[in-house]
Length: 192
Image (cartoon, rainbow, N blue to C red; front, side):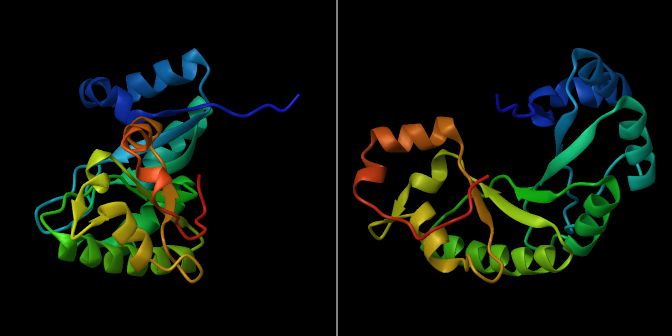
């Protein structure tokens, strides 16, 4: 029988983490989780990546609890210090960085994000860390007859660098109900 390790996306317990970070990680380990995904959404206005623990402190805490980070969600900012994000994730043992959300005023916003995803994906890949994009409902809105998701996939490079696609089942099924998948084909993409 195939056994698939189950993990916990820590965004789901963000309020508990804000009150007692170490205690919440202890509870997660006590429940039996071993794999976790961090949600680092506290990016400063200037794009500085800011966390409450050094990478060494967090890694020691996770090792003591028997937890392993699989990936980390890191909030988008056009001036994000990606080098700091990559270093931090490498030090805590994360295999991937996930850009979890962006909002779009128009088609050009999507094209600009695609450029940022390409550059971020290239830089992450060079450091041995996969870079992912996680969709929500708003990637299925349309500008000029194309969805944001279509625009992002059209303008990111899957071979050299680009973000793999982490489909959200809730938001993707919502789009499926609207006929999204019956009228489009996407280039081959890695899916996590």
